[in-house]
Image 1: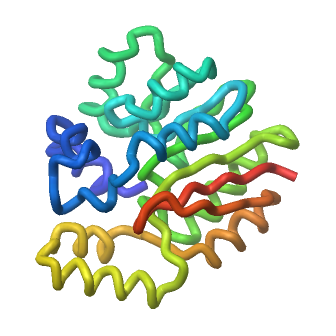
Image 2: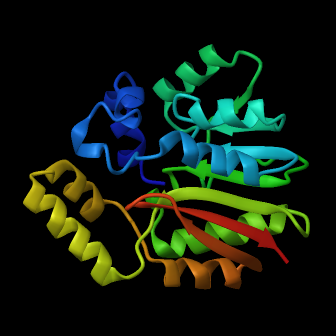
Length: 211
C-alpha cells in the first residue's frame, strides 16, 4: 500500500470520527449508516479476527463487543496510537493489507473503508494471501466503496463535481475504487464464494467464505 495513502491519515486523525459520524456534509453520504455497516462486518465475522486499518478503533469496538479475539493491523502511526490508547490490551501491529505478520490462527479477515487503497492486481494478490492463511470456511468480510460498473463510478464522480463536493470526487479519481464484477472474479480466483450487500450509495459489504 502506497505511503501516500498512509500519510493522508496524519491530517485526518483528529477529525476522522467527526467525518464518519456525518458532521462533514461533503462525506455524509459516504458514511451513511456507518454504525450499521460496522455492525454488519462484526456480525458476519467469527473466531480470531484480523482487522486491517483499525483507524480510531470504531470497528475494533464492534468486534470486541461481539466477543471476537481481535488482532489489529494499522500502518499509520497516529491512528495506531489512538487505537492503542482506546484499547490498551489489544494486540496491535504495524502493517497493511499486503505486508503484515499473520498470527498462527486466523478465522476472519475484516476491514472497513480500506480495501480501495489497493490496485486491482494488488487486491487479487491480497485475497490469494488471505486464502492461503485461512482454513476452509474462513472468511473475508470487507466494507468499502464499490461500483456496479465503471460507468456507474464515472457517473458518481460527475454527480459529486456538480454538487461541489470536489474532495469526494478527487478521492474517487485518485484511489483505486473498483467494480463488483472485477472483485467477484478476484475473490473466486482466490477460492472464495462471495456475496455483496449494498449498505448505502457508496458502500457495499463483501462477505466471502473460503471453499
